[in-house]
Image (cartoon, rainbow, N blue to C red; front, side, top):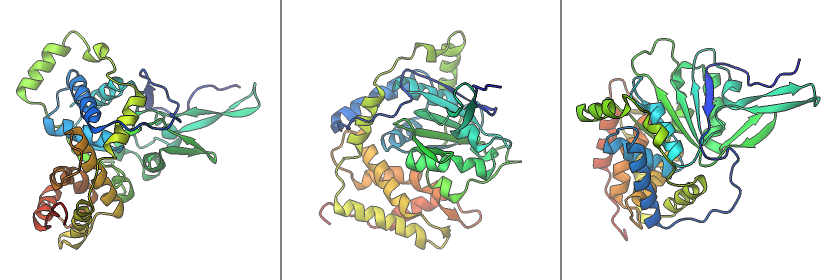
Amino acid sequence: MEESGERGGGCGSVRGGGSMEPMSTPLNARPVSEVREGADALRRAVSSVVHLSDEVMDTVLVTLFAGGHLLLHDVPGVGKTTLARALATATGGTVGRIQFTPDLLPGDVTGVSIWRNDRSEFEFHPGPVFANVVVADEINRASPKTQSALLEAMAEQTVTVDGETRALPRPFLVMATQNPVEMEGTYALPEAQRDRFTCETSLGYPTRAAEMAMLGEQATADPLAALRPVMTVEQLRELVAGAQRVHASEGLRGYVVDLIAATREHPDVVLGASPRSSLQLLRAASAHAAVQGHDAVTPDDVQRVAPWVLAHRLILEHDVDAQRLVAQVLSSVPVHRPGA
């Protein structure tokens, strides 16, 4: 019997205004001034749908313009999926959502090949990972085998199924969530997977004013329905390229390396930050500088993003607070001044 649907339950995707096909044209990196304008436009667009604190919004934008992925440590119902949909819609892209459960299979994430009798061949049916913004909800509820299905996608922006490698859409942003309350039946994220998330943050509960505004805005209408793209996917790719070309001096790069080395030498750290962390920290700092409209990365940019980039990557002694430890590292490492 001929089959034509995707296998597996608990996952799905919603398409926005963009294309699932990856762009192949050369990137025209936009200047920093346009990166800041684009970031401001996205901030206004997303804020019209979901109310976030300034720090959380900054973390989202830095992750996006760093070309990275975001880990959200949150309870249900605070707007994580709405945030992803708003971000995808505002950038003219697509959004996919995967509800991770213990019985989820890797093919439910990446897609599967279905035999077509009419063609006498296999036809690939892409999974929800083939989107610009992918929500991996409660990622720690799936088995390590299924969690690992995201590793190639996050690191290489490709998916390999049945020996064939397929490119994912670009930009490609995974927003994974972990529920910190209901931990029964969950699996800890492997270090290799945590290391692929550029930043970690928590949306948290809204303020009273924000929750009152939400009740007024969403009681009778869905603000997502009124949201329109403020840029195209191709424009976003060019803005991301521009953000990553912000100048970082040799002294600044040395400061990043010294910070990473200090995490490995701290007595309360079992496993310090990896070399990938150095690259992610510099990319996040470059994105932060560009979003602020600066032409060069400064130590202030590095210090601002360091807690978002480093805290979730460290394996610490019992009862040691990761954010406090990162603050200790920042205070202990001398800042490299320009020309140093």
